[in-house]
Length: 361
Ligand SMILES: [Zn+2]
Image 1 (tube, protein in one colour):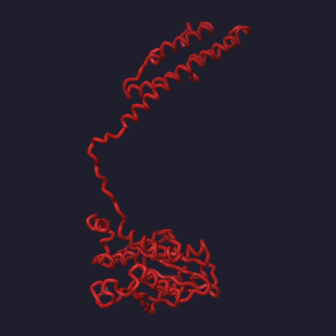
Image 2 (cartoon, protein in one colour):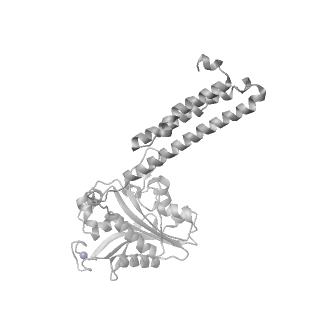
Image 3 (cartoon, rainbow, N blue to C red):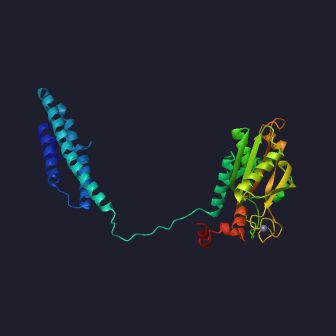
């Protein structure tokens, strides 16, 4: 503020503030936008004008502080004038801003309109990975059998990956299931059986679920092994569940996947978390049992492991093995994929080679 303004009366200062605004605003009152860039710049200028003439540090705001210098009988009138001028500024700025905004929006919409005469760019459609397709087929079969699909973490504690599954420390099974450990007691799960424990803790029993997912083993990659692969785990716990239910379920899902004439057989085996345990095979879907390359001329394809849930596993999740029993089974999704698509090397599934993956459209 200059000295002459400081010395002038409140009325004079108010007039000066009004004149200064009117002078500056004049070009906005007459402005008609002709292009988007100018309009955007003008919109910013209007905002700036608002700050300078209506803001806390504006000349108008300063005049409000001068009310004490106005003779008492004129104070009310002075106050009303300040308010009227302030309202005038606001109205002028609002209307300028509104017309600029309208113009800007109109121009932007026009620019974004699609030119239908331009030649199109054909998008490259993706598709699902063969393992995903296989997993979805399996999920459909089990959902139809009344199973829910469970998903859970891939990084596990020692408890869920081993101890809760009846594999205490120093148990030899820890050797052939060696996985990848982190420094603070966690490990990448070596089997989807961990989900059984989480699911029973979360849902309680009875339970019927499958858990498809990634698992990890410390394996050297070769045509039939990979350190990361996919498993699906099945669990059914209820009162009165027997080995017959297990055999019926496995036979049924294999029939639904490979056709009504598929035959299943069970061979006694050992797994720490089931007792008794069995591995299961099914009759070759390609040669129907007469022998071919896929079944290595045996007529049978080995698929997975199964058994009755070990009482210790049930006890771990607080289920009484006297009252409840259950069965569990598991097998490799990628192995099933390799069988169905006759892949000689399982690693093809993980190499992300588009030439290979495109065959599964
Ligand atoms: Zn065969």
